[in-house]
Image 1 (cartoon, rainbow, N blue to C red):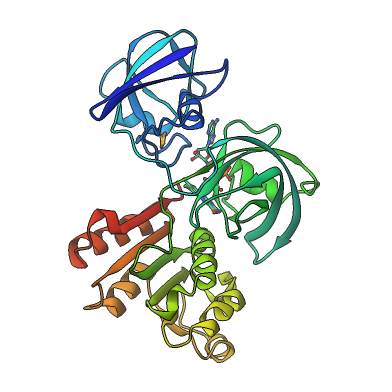
Image 2 (spheres, helix red, strand yellow):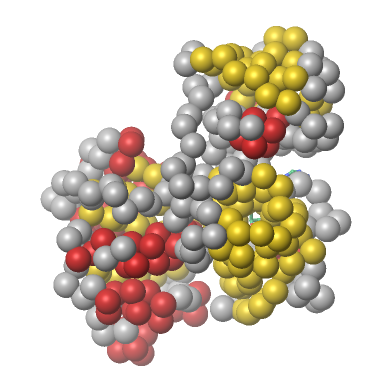
Length: 345
Ligand SMILES: Cc1cc2nc3c(=O)[nH]c(=O)nc-3n(C[C@H](O)[C@H](O)[C@H](O)COP(=O)(O)OP(=O)(O)OC[C@H]3O[C@@H](n4cnc5c(N)ncnc54)[C@H](O)[C@@H]3O)c2cc1C
Ligand code: FES
């Protein structure tokens, strides 16, 4: 099926395979349709059908609450049944030095619990993937409807193994599946790489990371790339990592290893929202700052007067991301181009 999309910055067309999501077909063909979550919740991919026939594969998708007329659809959830014409939001440009997003096959391996409700795992993929630090892929698990977005933790050129970290959501289909039995060796389908919350070492800026819970995933990829490129030899890195209590913390050894490579310029602050900092935790990581509070509030307090030449990365639960965005836009007065975020909705 031929799909013609018209945006205020141009008209493009691409072919959609039967059963292929319109968003995926566009991105695969190099047409950078707008999207954010790519999983039906945020409404960013909303488009208006002006001719043809489409169908939503998830008619209850929460992103539908942004619809204004009958012809509206979410390109990340819809497939075309005929040649179609759509009006879409502004077309973007592709992240540099990344593979074209497409479907890949993978096998889940190396599942390892990190805390009582966070697990890490790898996916061995069927060919090398170039992605930007901070990007994510969509994973589809056998027997569970819909794809889930997960950010890569690692960073490698031509990666054949992707690493992830997932927090268990009570009642959540995929996250609970990961905590069940017989997941190691499971075949998965992937679509990616996706996402614009990316770090590129040629951006001459200080790096501010604000992460809640598993939102640290993409930050690990960013820190990995930034350390490899010696970005913190010339620029500051401020990492704020929020968890509820000490027992919810993970990746602290890995963060300490990054910090130790650039001790003069890379600082790590861990915020505990639900308890005072246990002395044993502070003693175990003497070079970190620990404090009680919500991570966005702690970042706001400690970053006061230090926002010049900063690019900020934010990821985690939607209320934490929204609070951080308010801070970065209203108080820090960063330009939207210098605020990159993923809401784990
Ligand atoms: C850009 C991005 C990056 C993310 N990165 C991470 C990460 O690194 N680590 C992490 O722990 N979490 C991450 N998340 C959150 C993650 O994608 C899941 O929402 C979370 O793991 C809960 O999934 P679940 O299946 O357990 O819960 P569920 O409640 O079963 O599903 C949650 C989400 O899955 C999708 N979904 C559910 N049902 C359907 C359906 N029938 N059809 C289509 N879609 C459906 C929807 O997007 C829904 O919000 C990220 C989210 C986004 C948007
Ligand atoms: S990109 Fe489609 S709803 Fe978020």
